[in-house]
Amino acid sequence: MPDSGGLEFELRRMQPSDLPEVLSIERQSFSHPWIESTFQGEMQNRGISHPIVAVSGPGGRLIGYVLYWLVGDEMQINNVAVHPEWRRRGVAERMLRAVLEDAKDGGAAFAVLEVRESNTAARTLYEKKLGFGFLAVREGYYSHPDEAAIVLGLPL
Ligand SMILES: CC(C)(COP(=O)(O)OP(=O)(O)OC[C@H]1O[C@@H](n2cnc3c(N)ncnc32)[C@H](O)[C@@H]1OP(=O)(O)O)[C@@H](O)C(=O)NCCC(=O)NCCS
Image (cartoon, rainbow, N blue to C red; front, top):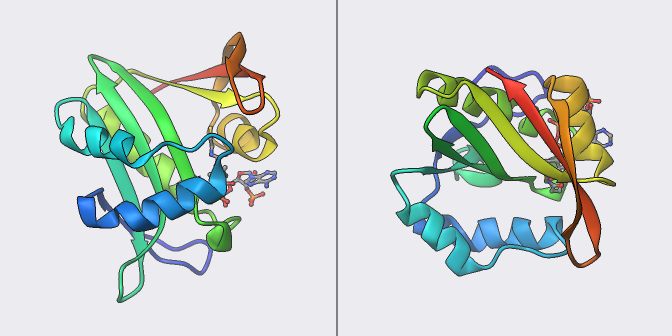
């Protein structure tokens, strides 16, 4: 993958041996993290779910992941995180651009996601960099802490 931030990585499907690294990033990234069985279920859901990891370097260090569903012509992005040590180097933006392209190739016409209202990093990435637009507010959608979700969409 071309490297704009001094960091090269490859994308591949998440596998069970990735779980310790994925769970570590997940717990460092979210106040209400997904649990192991949730990721296991997604890995087994081969028809719909696309859990994708970014790995870098000879040892294949896992630096981030994105998980989306492809249902009919809709891509639903359900989880995105980058290891805290590797943030602000364009990893999330490049991962997302790659999976948006893959989903489009797989028949998606529209991408949708939910984001915490106060998540400036993610909202700047989706809205300013990737061109997602506002669709709706879901009040009280998140817990720990309670917060609204902003629903964003992007025609592909
Ligand atoms: C949101 C997240 C995935 C971004 O990952 P990242 O690899 O650091 O993002 P990138 O380096 O690709 O950033 C791309 C752009 O997004 C915006 N952005 C990213 N982090 C930002 C921050 N902390 N503050 C403001 N803007 C930010 C910037 O516009 C950035 O471009 P720039 O660096 O040229 O200014 C990462 O911060 C993360 O894992 N957060 C915790 C989990 C999370 O909130 N996931 C999203 C749930 S909806």
